[in-house]
Length: 224
Image (cartoon, rainbow, N blue to C red; front, side, top):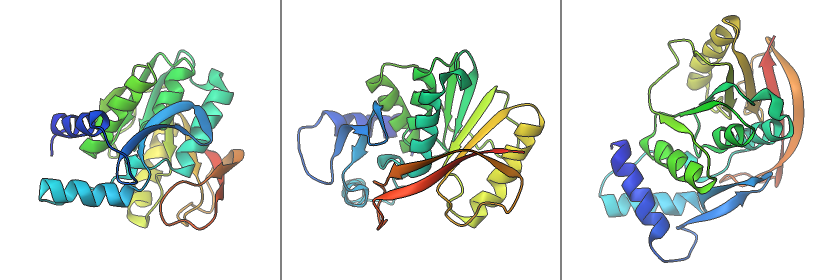
């Protein structure tokens, strides 16, 4: 699946009339109402419908839900715009692009939203357009290198052990090279026991699938 094909699919989804839990809808992020995103009321139903139409497997639509870690980071950037203003910002594993859009709204000079899922890159494109900001979508796997930016933001990137084992050393390398790193995490069980310090904590409304609690406590952290 190429990014142009995914973008065509999302643009068609956005412009085709219809309602229901399996459709995309432009809505405000619950904890960051300044930002509007194209989200699915039920991402699993949307995924099933799109796979049936395509006749093949598609990557899980993580971008079609707004995740707690990203909401906390986006809120933090908008409440503290000096963190992003005039700076080069990388949103790692951007998903919907919520944090990237927030960085752009906070006045960042340049924002790159990185994700390996072509549909996420397409979502970044349509969501940036909906919020009238400029965000560059990047689909490379960056985790073996070091980011050449001023600020790296990563929301909800430690959702499984294998990914955490790659992401955490990457964040450390970037921090050691002078990049300011902010991690938004609701503690899914893969935070390291040390090496991070608390910057802020937020009670974030939960909209992601298969979560019982309506609110999650999310930490914004940075490497020591």
